[in-house]
Image: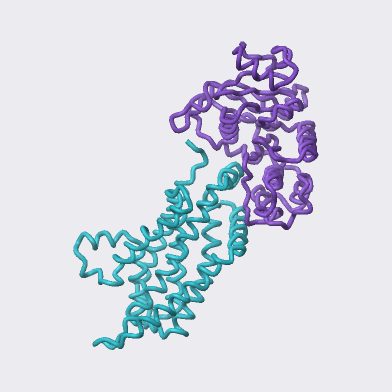
Length: 251
Length: 267
């Protein structure tokens, strides 16, 4: 790893992102707009017997799922483009290491993810009346992690797409089953054994559990930190997996 | 231009060899090279060595394996059988990455970055500063397009951005895949003058082309067809051997008669 190369790559990707107005809009504005839309519809229904509206129960989860869903295709397509334009082949003839390249992507998109998390968290707590027992800062932290998770998964899955079109199609395939099995709609305890085991190996499950912990507890719980650790492990595994799929030599 | 740090022993050995006056050490040595891609044999049992410090032209029709041969030399292509040695190392070796420049046929640049941003990025990967960046942008004649987005430039200009990105590290070996396609004649001449100048400074250039008229400027030529080498010699030697006046007809004569390979290059 070389810090100069890593930083040069980060700056290069941020410059490319800055030029793409629509991608900037997708990253910074769309998640906040969806949060408001989600709130406007789910708060129409009055509180249930437990005194909670659907938004009270679900609001916190969507602010963690949307960043992942937004970052996944953007990262996958940017990497796909790097492969298709011949620049990846060219980079491989320079002294740059594969991890420098992926780290550059990771850092650039993570900076975007931090900006996104700050905006979404502010909107969720200020515009919509999201309330949690735990600190909004913890929510923002999980928000950043889930966006970075989306980046890491996008970089990894881009290796299996032959075109940008296919890269986009991977998004629902990767994200929707995770959403169903993460315990947002049906608690994981009520799932039959095989579904439960399946949800055990999906990263979004741990994102949702961490948010449940923050939602219910005033202080950060060990369980939450364990969940955060598992998500970080998934991110590292996806980046290493991504590095393994980058081949300097074509067969 | 800042002096580059060379660490490898072979490089200093090579310099020593040059100072002893043995000018034609091979920069590239391919030994019984075979490349199979997707079930097709693209390169078939090729043995050839490219001399150091000169321009070697790689000629042949589209699809004859020129690009695959170049990709092998820069280490982007997996070798099926045989070997490729570049500047004394196995092709693609880590130690070669500061010494070999590669310009692909279609420009491999970032279309959403400006000319200067493209060159600056590749310079940064080698740890090279802005002075050299401006130098190479000027050398490829793009001073007026420094802050234009590469995507908005003409095809020929994009090709020159791509060339600048390879020149920025001042490579000892430069592999150019059809660098002058679609350029206006004046620019073509200017670029060739630069290539000749680089060779005069001891650099090795391997330039592919299907334009036979450019080939006269090469010290040596490699003629390829169907993944095999038809001839490797100085342009005059090929003309003499085939009794032809121009390379185009020499090429045809070689294919038709399937002459015994022209081998007049001293090794």
